[in-house]
Image (tube, rainbow, N blue to C red; front, side):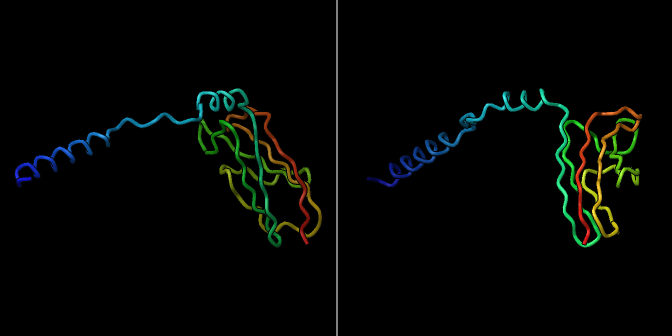
Length: 129
């Protein structure tokens, strides 16, 4: 085979290869509409994780459709220790430092900054050694 024919074949090969690498990608197998619908239908949920280290309690909150932020359109967490409000927190993850030794009830209540109650709250107990 002559050199020009080889070059032509090589060019055709690369054109075919580049044509096969188009932007047509297969659709994902997951039906995201159903997932989004399930999340939207349950718009008021709160999941809380906590970890005790010494006298500190690390707390992480995940809440559906809740804006953890200061300002007009934001919201915060009212933090209660043994029934007494001790803080307002504007972030989803925070730490309670220096909790005294013993067993304590911690309650978290999500509230919009304009005072509107969300109905989302969570209570748990910790034991500080």
